[in-house]
Amino acid sequence: MAYDHELAGRIRAALSFHPGIAEKRMFGGLAFLVDGHMVAAASNEGMMLRVDPAGSARLLDGERVRPVRMNGRDLGGWLYLEPEVIEDESSLRAWLDRGLARVRTLPPKPAQS
Image 1 (cartoon, rainbow, N blue to C red):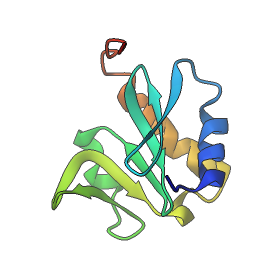
Image 2 (image 1 turned 180 degrees about the vertical axis):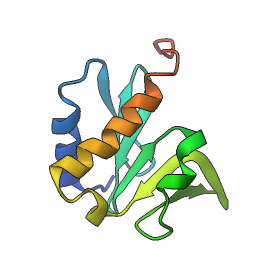
Image 3 (image 1 turned 60 degrees about the vertical axis):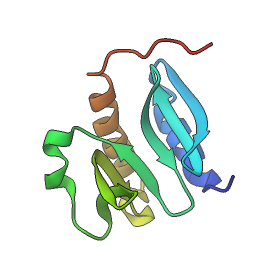
Image 4 (image 1 turned 90 degrees about the horizontal axis):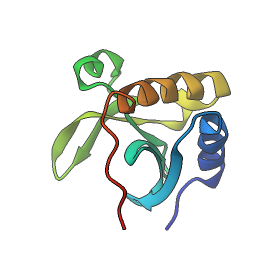
C-alpha cells in the first residue's frame, strides 16, 4: 500500500500529544483515528481530513482544498488537502486541530474484537 511516508510521519508527530490516537491502513493510505473515528489519512497525493460538515464549505478553495469524492459524490465533512496546503508544521497542525475538534464531538466507537 503506497502513501507518502514523510507526510504520515509528520501527521504522527503532530498528533502524538493527543490521547487515543491509532493508525490503520485504509483508503489506499495510512489513516489516523481517535476513539475509532478517522481524523486524517496520508496518501500519495496529500491528506484526507474530517471536519465539521456544517463549516466545511467555507474551507474549500476548489483546487488545493476540495471535497473528498467517492463513487461520484462529495462526502460531506471530508476534505482533500494538496501537499502545499500543509507544507509547514503550523499549517498541518491547524488543519489537524479542525479534524480533532470534529471527532471529539462524536461518541467513541465500540472496540472491535
